[in-house]
Every structure is written in structure tokens, then in C-alpha cells.
Amino acid sequence: MKEVVGLYVTSVAARLLEMHPQTLRKYERVGFIVPVRSGGMHRLYSEADITRLKMIKYLIEDVGLNLAGVEMALTLREAMLKMLEAVSSDESETGRQVQSGIYRMLRILDTDES
Image 1 (cartoon, one colour):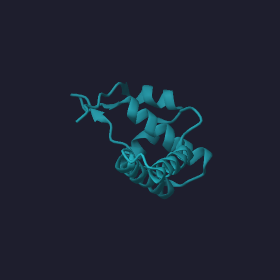
Image 2 (cartoon, one colour):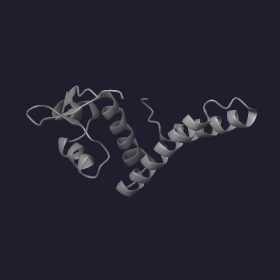
Image 3 (tube, one colour):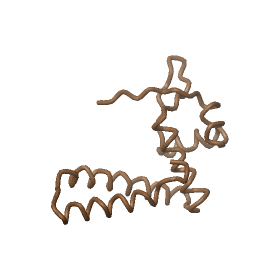
């Protein structure tokens, strides 16, 4: 299993994302993100956390989803990634079409900055 390394404290992550620190804490409370904790219990956000938070910000601010919509979008994204993993070794025409369709759906969730 890959170790997650926290790089950014809340204030730095908030500045990078142009979000209020309280917004980051809210996203943690609703389960969208789980930053690692330092020995002093400070939240530390990894590059993966920042990427996920950019996606959440995009879904809320640009797409106009509410928190329930974001939760559904994140759940669907996880399911698509699992499907992609399951069909990744299928080199048939059908397998390639399924992979292409999944990639198109995943791009819908991408931010303009990705």
C-alpha cells in the first residue's frame, strides 16, 4: 500500500486552493477528504488531497453541485476507476470502447487546471 505523505498545513492548503480553512475542515467533516495528522494533531494535506479538493471546488463552484451532488460525483468517480482497472487488460475492440467511454466520463470531473 502506498504511504500518504502530508505536505501542507491547513493554512497553506487553503491559500493554494483559494479556500477558507474552515471550508477544508467542513469537507473533512462530511468525509470528502481525510488529511493525515501530525504528532501535534495538525492536519497535513498531501498532493492527492489537494488534487481531490481542486475537483471538489470545481464541482461546487463551476458545475454548481451541492454537497450531496459532490458526494455522488465522487462515488461515481471511484466506481469508474474500479471499472477501468477491471477492463484495463481487455484489448478487444469492446474493451477499448469501454475504456474510452470511462475516460470520457472521468474527464467530465476534471478541473481546467488538471
